Length: 170
Image (cartoon, rainbow, N blue to C red; front, side, top):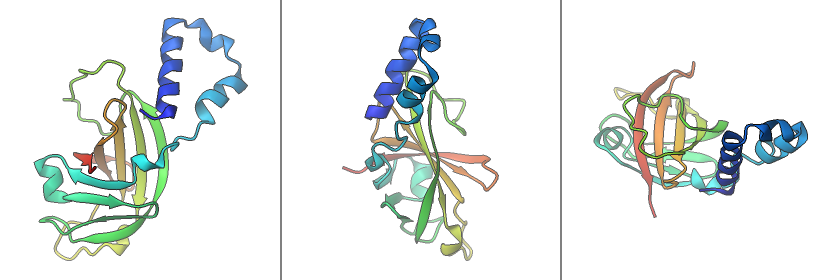
């Protein structure tokens, strides 16, 4: 769990336990504790090699290799290989994430998800007779499994289309 996630979890638990804490914390203190903490305090969580953790993930992407400026995947049955740039468009933390399958079992109490949404330059990826990749990829990292990510493909309007699973290569 990153320092940001730990700090946020402790504060949220304190607020749930003692609701008056929210009113005691001034706006400036609340801002400093939650908002001013960089959402990407540990950029290493996104960067690395992410290997498919399921048949659908394997069939579509196989694996992602993410650097600080580029994302790539090898050729699979559904996509041609691609190396393209990306930009982080949003980060957030919550107990759910956009596009989460409703069938998920809430078996882990107090689990939070750190979600990073990236916009990829899909125009740099060849399409041909293959499926074109989604322009937005949302990586949601469970607080108790930082080496695991749910990846939701989203269209330009932000509508989720699929949820895939990946694990970080060691």
